[in-house]
Length: 123
Image 1 (tube, helix red, strand yellow):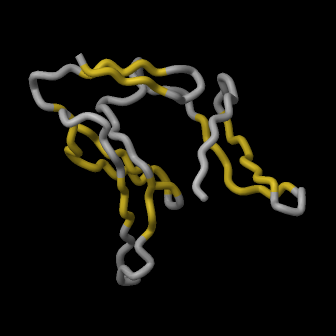
Image 2: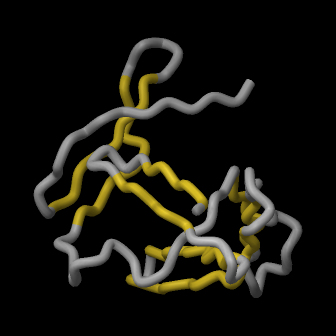
Image 3: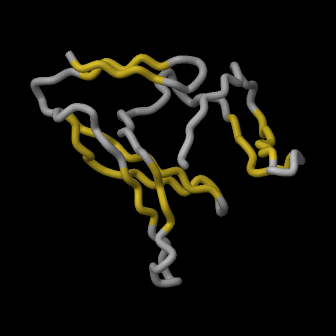
């Protein structure tokens, strides 16, 4: 059964933070790490990211190429996927930024919060 939870971690200073997960036996293990870097500009991003529901690595893809299938659902009909930007930050880090576009007659207002959540409204 899928689930989602939001955890407010506040404002983090620049650095690397461990991400741990509790196993069914109650023990914690390091799952990943969270790298926080200082923003390079005023805006969080130069374009508007699209909504995604999930991302799966295609295990059947040839070994010479990696394929990531990204899926999402729009709750309004004025948005559509425009492009996907792939950034190779380091040898072991790839950022995937799916970008959305809108029909010209609509205007999207995105409200971002400190806990990583956002609310979007169409005008």
